[in-house]
Length: 190
Image (cartoon, rainbow, N blue to C red; front, side, top):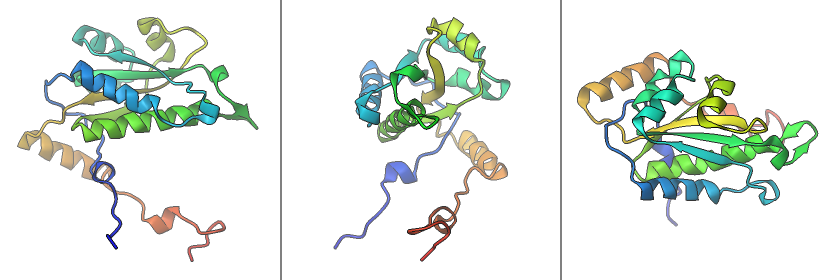
């Protein structure tokens, strides 16, 4: 029997912010959105909608709507703005399913990007009304997440600086599985 192993796209995924100047092809963009489109959703409602922001001037304009800690987004090959109308999906017992469904779709896009050698970095710090004004998003839609994408820089300086930052901020650490998982009942570690 073959040994089970974690998919390399999952094991190697990192949220980087130092990219090359290489553009993402139209075909690659369409494949990313196809991956997102095929994600599961509650009753197949498919609430997620996307705006691909790919020109330097539009990336700069959208970057002006972001929290100052997300200014790295100006250097992305493109930004994906995922939006959804809460009324387009189920809301049961106070739970808005559109958020979960959008998360599944974005994760599909992120892993497809990883397969293509493109890295993705999500952010949640923005002025929602400014983003809506900038991109002409209707009022009934919510901005769920904004994701920067690009081909990662492999320069030794860039790689070293990114590694130092990841270690200084503990971004390289993951909880042990025993910290996250219970079997059958809460805190039953078998």
